[in-house]
Image (cartoon, rainbow, N blue to C red; front, side, top):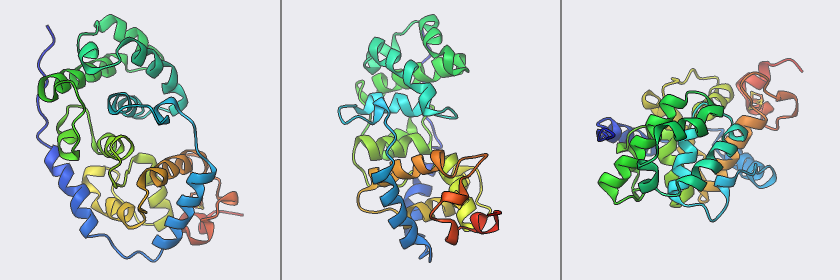
Length: 243
Ligand code: SF4
């Protein structure tokens, strides 16, 4: 019998950082240019993943976001499709056999931790939310194994909330552009969330997908393509990079 998941107590603190950073939102000189650029980028370079399709529900998206942690989107496609075919809802995932789950997750690595996380999330959804994904950011942040990135991504992409999303890749882009040594721990980096709020347009989901794609395709971790990047003239890192 699987253990009952424990409710997270750090969720509300994370909720405060995300929401209060909106009030701290600086009037960054770069903001209008960044906002305009990411809007253009998202309309031109839209990566296609099955969890981005319009018919995908909040549960499927939540599972995808959990799998995407420290993993490339292309690698997640196969295991995510297999999971969704076998366990299309929280109730079925909560009763999944551990061995079967691990087999599906094996190509991603860390299958023991990932299998445990998925089952605990599913159990929490069944125990506290009748098997449904909660609608509010606060409740999402209380789920086990759901951090600031996954919670804001589900709120924005599945429920249409106007929220910024910041993951390690977007944080890297912000650090490079501003030249500011923003803290890598998203729970201790209200400045990063403030900057994300400051460039967020009304249509948040397209912008957020654009930011994720830009961080993967242009401002990548090891080989940023500064030579073709349109932000180079206003980017602290790009200005220092050799032509
Ligand atoms: S100029 Fe280089 S470092 Fe700056 S945002 Fe563009 S790709 Fe990233």
